[in-house]
Image (cartoon, rainbow, N blue to C red; front, top):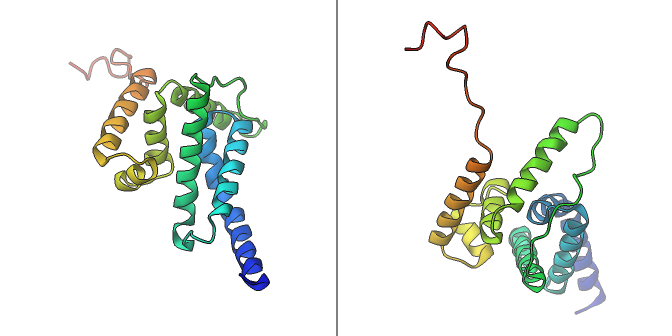
Length: 177
């Protein structure tokens, strides 16, 4: 490999990192529940991706790195074999405290799910991957994705029921029988 090839590869990777980092950070944060852990996870994933960059196709770079990220998170979790509790809420600004409260609540709810269900829910519904793409990223069957998504969503719905409507309010008392 000549100097020009390496320089072109480095420029392509730097461009990829700039474009992909926000998406990878959001996914990592939802998987870990911690900004610091998410940063470490993204950094480790990008290092591994760089090492394989010569084999990664440009149109599949984000999917490749996302799979590395999920696998690295799984490996880290297996080494620790415990739950990672969220110690702090995400950083807040006074302008979007409600949004931060909602995000914090979502992360806390996701943290209650088993690791496999959490990964499937994040990849399917946050990263908007298809069942097939989620299965490929996680290295599991489409049926396992469907099952984990169904169970995960059921657990989240049970933990966070929709607001109930007041059937006996004065405005509706006469109209509901």
